[in-house]
Length: 393
Image (cartoon, rainbow, N blue to C red; front, side, top):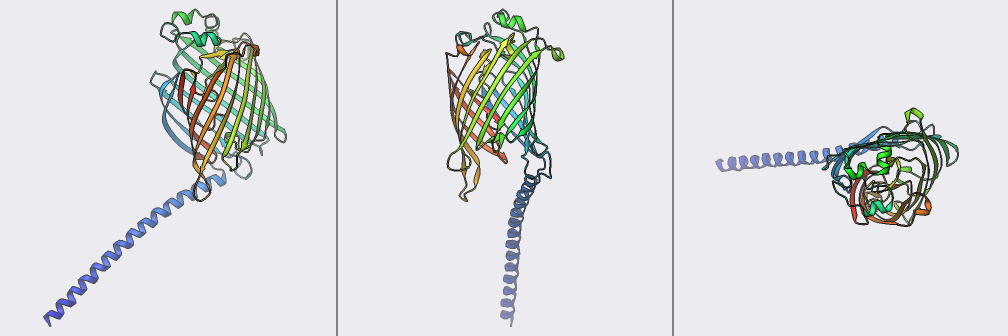
């Protein structure tokens, strides 16, 4: 009898342990299910924002290195939204904001708006930039840029730069837009070394740093998504006339054309992008407003501001490759390769010394068809690593 009771008690203990293990296992499964449910809920909320056109904000930060800024820590937010939540066809507008500080003591903030209004009858683009930085000034023209020796006694100064450049365009026919542009900019140099202070262009215009311009813009735009086109054509022609409006100090004119073509290669997201752009300035152009190569949007890898003159011309061909998931969907990751060349001169007849350029890059989609851009570009005797939002063109 005693033995039977012991066996019965042992069986009860085993059953009790089994129930505890079963309960613990069930709790684990429930926790795993909860995590999956949370992930699915987050994905559903994000998709609901995309579908409804609600405001989306994505913060990002990372390092960069450019020839003019040195090592830089940059941070920013990608914001996108629909201007009309009830319009299912209108594209999402984008307004990325980027700011950073560098090892040289420079700091900057920039934003580039692309917005769509009134069933895409109205488009408003706007660039806003502010930069304060220890900088170098080589002079005007290719020979000055290529032959001058960079040092504290030959090229060094401190530069403050501001620019506000909106374009307000009305669609008067399918793919065709026209409208006014405004350009307010300010470039002021300080603490210039003797060689910079005695440069003719610098000494003539540095005490007259503010410029204001009014102009007209014509566009043809058949791109599928302007901030990251996989197909279509873009042509922009503009003329801006700078004068004493709003207190501007200098009178000059700028004529600009920008031609881009995008070819789909086999799959969506596999794109060849080609750009040809020219900018031509006339009359009393201040040194800060001259055409320059080496920005994050053209020949990446050159020092921004080294190669400057009244006019410039460049061409770039870029292959953009978004990777695919095993499911067949486009992933968030991509890569690019590009090559190009550009030239500066007082007029187009001076475009003789061409600057080669090539580079590689990584793309991470942070919002639908809106990428984080990491580029490493190579120029003649220089290179740079760039951290930015959206494509260069």
